[in-house]
Image (cartoon, rainbow, N blue to C red; front, side, top):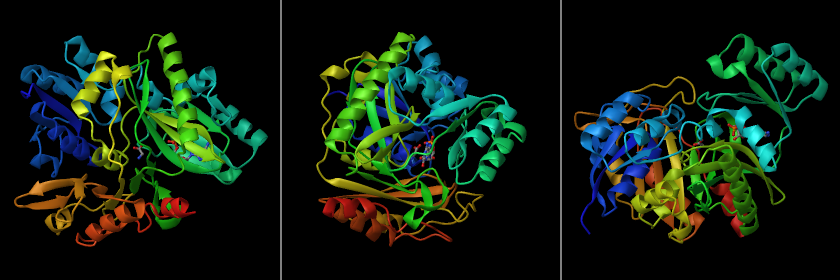
Length: 429
Ligand code: AMP
Ligand code: GLY
C-alpha cells in the first residue's frame, strides 16, 4: 500500500514514545513528526520544537506540512482546544474537543455527568466557598477525599485520613491557591475501598470499544507506599478487570457518551476511566481524555491493529466496524525515575546500557524525560524511562522487564521492584 499520509504526534513523554513506535509501524505513515518529542522519539520521528501547549504553533505547523492526521498525547492541548482549532482548518485529529476534554479538566463536570448517567461513583459535594467546605467536612468526618476541580498535574487529590488533613487541604486549595485557579472549586467525596485499575476505551461518540485491560502503579515506593506519582509502572492485562467488570464498565461508558451527546458533545478519542473495584463491583473515580502514561506502553506493545486505521475509525464515526487485535501475551512496563521524583528532580545524568537493554528479546525501552546531548542520552525529567517487555505470562513479562532494568544505569535512578507482583499473585490464586 502506498504510504498515504504524514502524521504529527503531539507530546514528549513515554506515552508518546510508545505511540511513535506504533505509528512508525503503520504502512500508511509517510513522514512522522513529533512536537516536542524526546531523546528516544528522535530516533523514530522528526522532532519539531513546538511545545504541547502552543496551540497556535501546532496548528500552523500542521497546516504548513499538510499532515493527514494529528495524534494528541497529553491532556493539556486537548483542554486548550487543539482538536477544535485543527478541525476548523480541515485537519483531522485524534482526541476530544475542548468541551469533551472537560471530562478530565473539571472534576465537578465529571461528577455531575456520572450522576446524570447513573454510573456508580463516590458520594460527593462541590464547593466554591471555603467556609461551606469546612462545615461539610465537620459534618461528614474522616477519612474523606478533597479534590481541586481543574488540572493540577495529577497532584490535586488528597485522600485524608484525618479531619485536620482535610481542613488543611481546603486551606491550601481555596485560600493559599497552591494549584492556582484549579482550587476555586473543590470536590469533597467519600473514600472508596478496593483495587484500582485503568479502563481505557475508544469511542467515536456512539460506539465504545474497550482496549485491553491495564493497571497503573501510582505510588512512588513498593507496596503502594509514599506519595502519588504520574505512574511508576503498568501491566496489561489486569486480572482485577474480569469479563464481568468489563461488561459493566462498557455499559457505563456507553451511558456517559450518550449523556454527552445529549449535551451536544460528540466525544471522540480515548475515554479512560480510573476505576476502584471492590468485590467485583467497579466505581468510577475519575475520567481522563487521553491514553494513560505509563499504561499506553504495555498497551501499544500488545496492540496488533494499525493505529492509523483505529484513529481514523474514531474520527470518521465508524468504530462499530472495528475489532481490535491484541497480542495474547502479557506486557509489563517498569518506570525508572530520576532522583528526587516526584518532587524536584536532578537532570542531566548520563544514561548507560540502553542498547544492552533493548537487545533482550521482546523488550523495548521507551524514553520519557530524556534528551540527546551529543552522542549521549541524558536525563531531562522526572520519569525517565519505561522499560517494557512481553511474556507468555505476566510473570514472564515482569521477569524480562526487570532483566532489562538491570542493564540500565544512571546516577540516583529509582524504580519499583514490585510492578505487577500483586497481579501475578492474583493470577495464581
Ligand atoms: P483521581 O485523580 O481523581 O483519580 O485521584 C487520584 C488518586 O487518588 C486515585 O488514583 C486514587 O488512588 C485516589 N482517590 C481518588 N478518589 C478517591 C476516592 N473517592 N476514594 C479513594 N481513593 C481515591
Ligand atoms: N497513569 C495515570 C495517568 O496517565 O493519568
